[in-house]
Image (cartoon, rainbow, N blue to C red):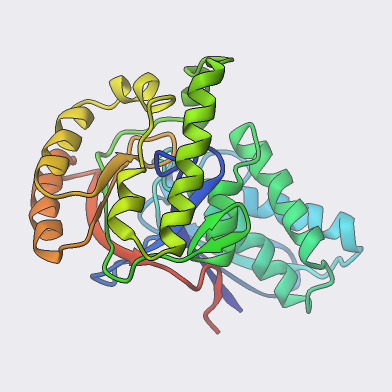
Length: 297
């Protein structure tokens, strides 16, 4: 049995810690984690993929199996193989993808002894251990697919094309959260909450340009953007070149941008490829992955 868990872009400017989207590259490039599980005489875990070398210490997949056994009492040994298809500390939900793939695959292999609530609780526990907090804005779109406000799936304009540009540097979520102020002015919080509400309303009214115009982040991005060389300059160029919205994906360093014109999106892709490291970075045009975590066989 194999399970694929896609990359996600969280926050999306307007929905800090609440909003996220699962994405799939248009060119068919894999951008996610895949876990295969099979019966065995003893436990084993192998890890391959372009980012396998970035994983250090005990893998979260192993911890998922240990906790699953504690919760269910099932002790059957498993041979597991993780294909690590996205970089760690990229702002693309790398830890969430590993967690979701592990829990869905292991629970599915044993005919789902954990119900939906217990399955999600285990994901939250494991993600919290990895990232220092539970980030539903990555976990739930990775699990459910689509654009999610917590576990509510939102309609997405069919003509939206998403750009993801990973520059090739690593920024740990814990460190990026430590940059944020502990409190913000009430008026600023109210304004951002209203902006999120209007964003959701615009999507349901099929007003894509209005929704995208509300994807703004005056609260978090100003504290994080200086740690990503060239981010602000590229963002400004993309907006000037026709992007409807742009910002940091999750805590960065990946940049996301939204377009409703494929020609402009392709021009933006060319610019993004000049920004990213040719060795460690990448840039992709994407559509929304509506499937989320999926059984491949």
